[in-house]
Length: 115
Image (cartoon, rainbow, N blue to C red; front, side):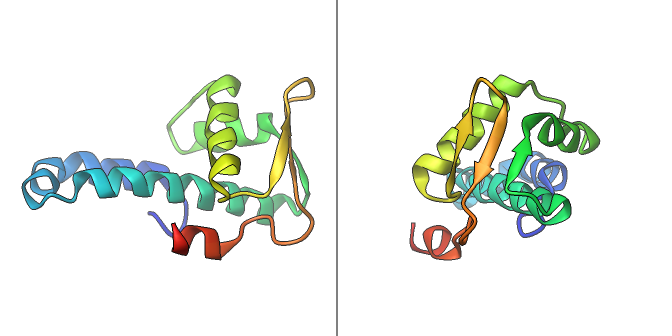
């Protein structure tokens, strides 16, 4: 689920094997990987829509389709963190509820690998 940005599968696996991951000492690491899963979901949405300006309503629909409905404020929060960490290049227009992505390498892979 991580590579495809399938949050539902990733989250279900995290919950299903939570006790095992805690015993192995890998649970917190996997919880941090959720950020990469979010990034990959936004990348898939970008690739499907082929736009650099993405309405957060589209993103909300993707979360709803995954069976994880969340509100626009939570989506903005997730995106703000991804942008701050360098996983996504762009900015949020709060007034228009739009993610504006960089036209040049909006999802840099080096930032995910190096951090």
